Image (cartoon, rainbow, N blue to C red; front, side, top):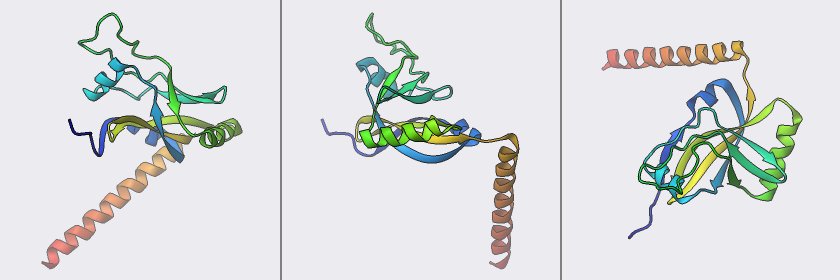
Length: 158
């Protein structure tokens, strides 16, 4: 059987990019059980309430919902358990210092398979204020309107 190639995105946390300003991103491996992997391969996961933290020199991912595997038996996994993240020691130290500064948190951005291995992209993020969210939305709308005007102008020239 040939090995998987490329990336297959299982879940993304679109709300995180709305609620937070992402400073740095890291790709981390996950320690999973067999039924969790099968459930992820079926494309079932939710990052909505998830968060990550550093404790005892190890990085952890918590409150990410990976539903139970349908064909699993008594050894099925609990859907919202604490999962270990696989990162380099230097990355863990850097993340730990950043989150201890205050105002920063670790947020899972996406969950995917990269060459057959489950990965999670986590971001060191700072919470946005309400007016920051409105300003970002306004900038996005202005850019969209400008792009429309440019394309309409281009179509008139043809």
